[in-house]
Amino acid sequence: MRKPLSLVARTVCDLFAWFLIIFGVYVIIHGDVTPGGGFQGGAIVGSFMALLLVAHGGDRVLEWVKASIYWIMLFVGLMMFIGFGLRGIPEGAFFYNFLAVPHDVAKTMAHGLIPFSGTIGVMDIAVGIEVAGGLTVIILSMFRGIVLHDFADSRKETGHDG
Amino acid sequence: MANLPFVVVGLLFLMGLIAIIAENNLFKIAIGVGVMESAANMFLVVLGYRLKGDIPVKFLPGPVDVYVLPTPQALTLTAIVIALATSALMLSLIVMLYRHYGTLDVREIRRLRG
Amino acid sequence: MKLKALFIAATLVLGGILLSGLDAVHPFGVPGDVAMDEYFLDHAMEERSSENVVTSIVFDYRGFDTLGESAVLFTALCSVVMLFRKGRK
Image 1 (cartoon, each protein chain N blue to C red):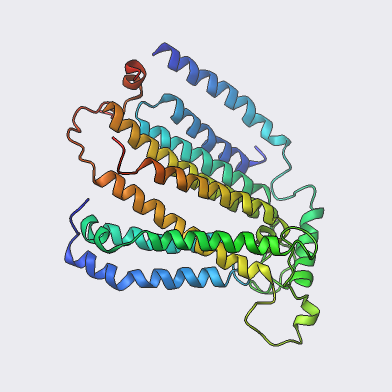
Image 2 (tube, one colour; image 1 turned 135 degrees about the vertical axis):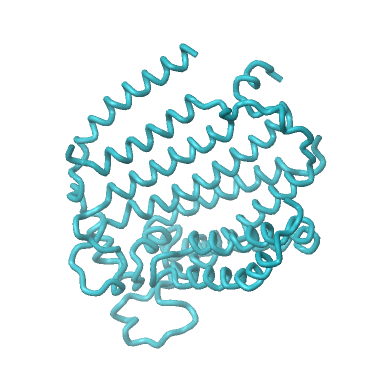
């Protein structure tokens, strides 16, 4: 659990781990055009930290990783989600879509920074950031809490078959 | 038997329930709970199917006339995230139990009582 | 040992009774009430101009359930982090 794996596994992990982030961000951003969305893309980005922990061993990764970045990602995502929900109260109701443009008008306009589907695309990104940060915090805290405790004797266990 | 997909999902749920009752190791009980949650999510998806339907995304599969119902798929997304949260908490509690009692057997823990 | 076998037998009997009642659900492939889903499929493109109907249901028509689910995820995360702190013995 603490020693790194062989040279082949470490090289493949170095080449391959960054494509996970690119694919995850692609699934998050194209949430209103293709199947996918916020939760699915956030889970794909959260598996980046798991791959690093398995391939490079626990000691080397836990030296340079800081958990405060992922706590900030979690809070920013949640505050953006609730903020856009409360912003729709003067227009009508809670979670009202005040940025959407109907399809007849959208056929004549050019594309801008905010997509035509309004708060659907923006809340996609907020939930994606929140789920990615949250899953990474869970994996890091469980790994740090289990590995640093020495389990002495595992031969006294009962309950296995045979 | 008319509704074969419903019966298969029901059998999967029953197998998860028997795994919770009959096993002695704590990890196998946690696996049984996971199988039950997956069976419930599959039942939601099977409920909203229409024969010869396509995915409910416009302009992606080409010209189509019959769509699958989209509401059960939206409810299943929420249920999958909740299943993830409960299984993470269950595994953490199993680690805490092992540190306190020193064993993973349910019969020993019931005998020791603290 | 006798008690566990009795529990498993009772579960199998109850499971058999419930499985035979699955014929009362609608026949596979022909759902009954589709009025709400027909409204979603017809009007999600006109009103919101988003092509993915499932995402527009999760984030716009039923956004309150997504708020509850984020709360559940956050609560589970805080419980797991609290259990594994270093000062405990």
